[in-house]
Length: 69
Image 1 (cartoon, one colour):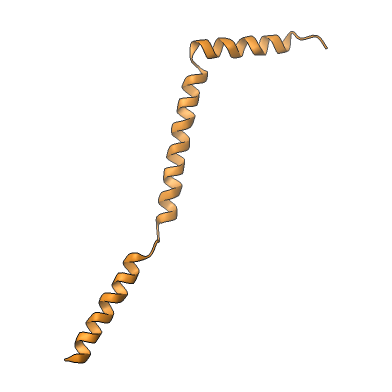
Image 2 (image 1 turned 90 degrees about the vertical axis):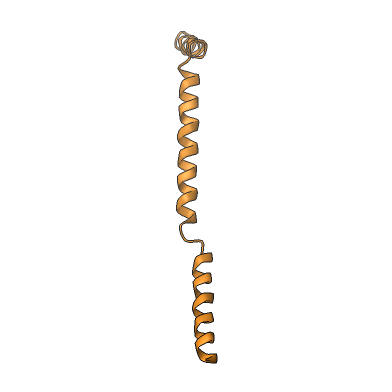
């Protein structure tokens, strides 16, 4: 009887150890990082292509192309 209880306890403890492992955490962190980067890129794209910002960027480029050296 004692050996049966001890064997079952050993199985439970080993199961808890495998449940606590951090396998897959790195993958989910990479996924969250990619999602955040894509969201930031979308926001940046929307800002850069908006009317006032686009006009200002065009003025900067035109000024740089017309500069005398």
